[in-house]
Length: 138
Image (cartoon, rainbow, N blue to C red):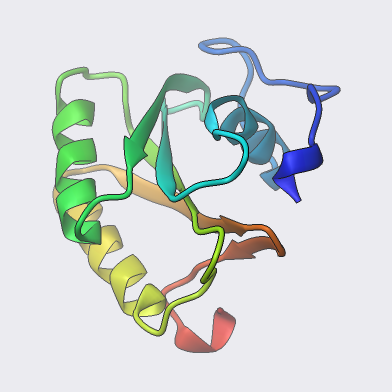
């Protein structure tokens, strides 16, 4: 799906425009996602007004808790970052049975650090999936 995305028509400007819709978020993520799709994680750091302040790309981490701890550490280096959105690129197996539990765990880690985990999406060749803490909403 994202292999064919061209430059977005509307792209929120860093530090200026709020990222208020899923389309805004995907447009920002599309800037960092490598093509052809390969396993990676892209994280978007946002301020209290939901404006993008950082876009980071990681090779797929060994665990979600390792990734979220690293992101919390990065957010802690600035007093501006208040929320995070995460995109996991999984070209082969988009959804995993532990996704809902992993989301819940990452959400708890963020809350304890005073940061909101705003969104976790999984991007695959077949589409975009929004992960939530309730297994029924996968």
